[in-house]
Amino acid sequence: MNSKVIDWYEQKEHIDEMKSWDKGKLKIWEQQVADRFPRGAKILDIGSGMGREAFSLYKQGFEVIGLDISNYAVEKAREESWKANNKVEFYHYDGNLFPFDDEAFDIVILWNQTFGLLYGDDYKKSFLLECKRVLKPGGLFSYSGHDLKYIREHYDYCLDDDKFYPYQERDIYWETFSLEELVNYTKQNDFNILMSGQGEIYVPEDGVVLYCLCQKGSGFQMKKDSSTECWSKVGAEEWIKAAQNNDFRNYFIMPFTLQAMGEVKEKHILDMGCGEGGYARALAEKGAVVTAVDCSDTMLAYVDDQAIKTGLDIKTLLQNSNDLNKVMDNEYDIVLCSMMLMDVEDLEGTLKEIHRVLKPTGKVFISILHPCYKPKESKWIIEEDGIRVVVTDYFYPTEWIGEIKGISAPVVYRHRTLSDYVKAFTRFGFLLTDMNEPIPTKEQMEHSKRIEWLSKIPMYLFMELENK
Ligand SMILES: C[S@@+](CC[C@H](N)C(=O)[O-])C[C@H]1O[C@@H](n2cnc3c(N)ncnc32)[C@H](O)[C@@H]1O
Image 1 (cartoon, rainbow, N blue to C red):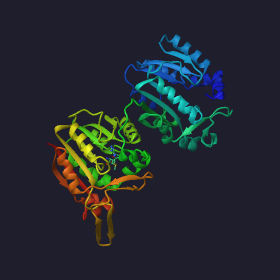
Image 2: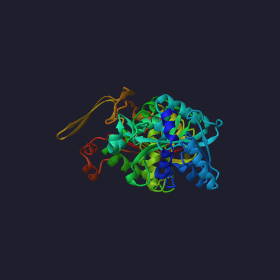
Image 3: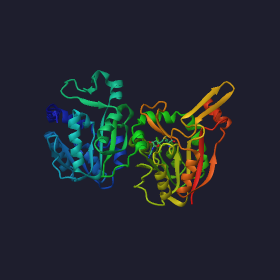
C-alpha cells in the first residue's frame, strides 16, 4: 500500500471523519449485494475502518472479520466491538499479505471505493491474488470504485486526469473507473462477474459509485469456441443499447415469440443466449421460473442487476450452449433460442444439450435470420414501390466475420441452410411442430418503415420443436 495512504489513515481526524458518515446501516447498493450472500457466511471486510459494514453485516447474521491498514482505526473499531459486546474481530496489516490461512473465507468485501487506493495495475493484481488465496473455491468478492463519468459531471474541479482528489491537501487520491475497467480487473484474474453496475448510496443526493460482485473461479471454465470468444468481447453497454432500440426485435420478433409461447405461468424456462435479458424479464413477469444462459459474463451481470432492481427471480448461468454442465437432465418445460442458434459454432452439441435438459414433452421456441433470404451473398434492395432480395449464393459462405450496427467488436456470422437445420433437429430427437414466417400487423408496421419490408419478404424464421 502506498505510504501516503497509510499515513493519511493513521491521522485521527480522518478516521473520526469516517465515523461521522456512519448511518449504522449498509448503503443501498451494498445491501443489494449482501442479499446475495449465503446465510451465515464468513466475511473478510478489508478496509474495515470504524466497522460500519462489519457491524451491519454481523447484525444480519454473518460472521465478520475486519482488516485495515490503520492501527488507529483498528483500535477504535475493537473498542466499539467490545462496547457492543459482539463478536466482530479487527486486525491490522500492511496492505500486502493478509494474516489468514488459504480458503479461510466465504466472502471478501472491499467497499467504500478502497479499490481506487490500490494504485497501479501491479498492486491491484497482487491484491486480487491475495483475495483469491483467502477465498474458498466459488467464494464471492465484492468491491467498488468511483465512477469517472459521475465525478467528472459533479466534481470536475477535484479531478486531475482520472485521479480524484476530494481533499484540499492533495496527499492522496482515488483512482476512478468506467464500469468496464472496474469489472475487467477481476475478470482478467479468473473471477466470474455476477453483478455489476452503478450503485446508489442512501439518498439520490449522495450520488452513485460503481460496484461489482464476482465469484472466484472454482476450477470451472466455460467451454470456449469461436462463438463464445467473439460474443464475450461484445461490449455489454453497446449491446444493451443496440438490442433495446432495435425495432425488428422489440416490435416484431419479441412479440411474436412471446405470443407463440403462450401461457408460461410456473413453467420452467431456459433462455439460451439471453443477451441483455429482455425475454427473461418478460417471461418472469408472466410468472415463469427463468434461467438465463449466455457466454458473456458482462451481459449476465446486467441481467442480474436488472433482476434485482425489478425484483424478478431470474437465475443466470455462464455457459456455452453446447456444454450446460450446471444444468441437470429433464429440468425445463421450455427452451427459448431467440436469435442465437445461427450464432453458435456447435449447433449439434447445442441441440444435444437442449434435448438433455428438456423434460420429455418439453418444447423449444426458435427464431433465426431466415436462411433463404439472409445468407451472406444476399442484397436487400429497397425501391420506391417495394423491395427485392437478390440471393446470389444460398450455400456459401457458411461462416464469416462481420459487424453489427452499433457494436465495435466483430462477430462470427454463420449460415446454415434450411435443410441443415431441419435435419439436425430430427437427428437430435426433436419433432418440428410448427414453422412461421409471420406477416407484420398494421400496428407493427406503424412502428417503423423497415418492419413494412417484412410484409413482402421474411427476414426472420420462427420454428417450434417438441422433444420426441
Ligand atoms: C443475437 S444475440 C440474441 C440475444 C437475445 N436472445 C435476444 O434475442 O435479444 C445472441 C446471444 O447469444 C449469445 N451466444 C452466442 N454464442 C453462444 C454460445 N455458444 N453459448 C451461449 N451463448 C451464446 C451471445 O452472447 C448473445 O447474447
